[in-house]
Length: 288
Image 1 (cartoon, helix red, strand yellow):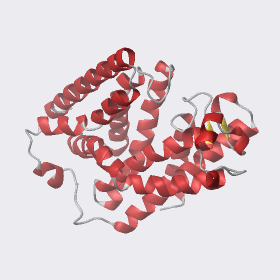
Image 2: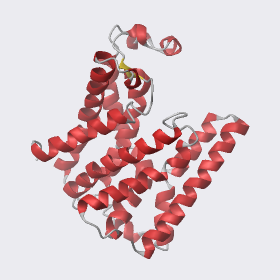
Image 3: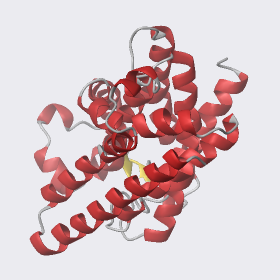
Image 4: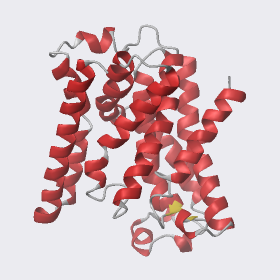
């Protein structure tokens, strides 16, 4: 591991811990959820800031060394990965939750919401009449696909870029490891970077230990997927877009399409990991 990588890790983790403490203070003292969300939004740009500090604010490296460019982009590959991320991935998550939760009745997996009567009462009161339908998944799923793509190529991509320039850019460039080992290491670093906000209840509620562990496993699995997208599309824009789509679709899946019982097993937990592993296998043996 080079000195640059060590310095990056020290800076990036320091930002993560600092913002974790600030978010905890705001959560307990001000009781303002918007302030906490702003902290988490700021956190997404700290990997980029950490890279810039290590590179002495040489912005050119983002374009020349970390592949943030449009010059050689493979749009066919970009489109393929958008379809995989915005449609196939959430579809597999829904199928897995239905199988384990609805069919096998394993409570931790929750259940797919198949009837409007299963929606939270508070939510139903706020829904416009055209969304209050008998089978909400038939409306929410296509809306989720469209909205996640729109968010992924616009605002969410901007925030995701703040992370991806570090994980798929800087670390991918400076970690001199073989493909498999490199993605295990990057995924572990990425997952561990989330721990301070997970300890604040982000994503996994009070499941602090299991939430931290599943986040690391989740980030390792996504790292292989995003690394492949970078390699095939020749631009860092692709993993940034996909990262943004994942963040957007997970919000819709949680509560509107899937009833969450234990978030460690839900759309951002075990079900997600199983779905992304399925896609990786499909890519290896079928979608070559």
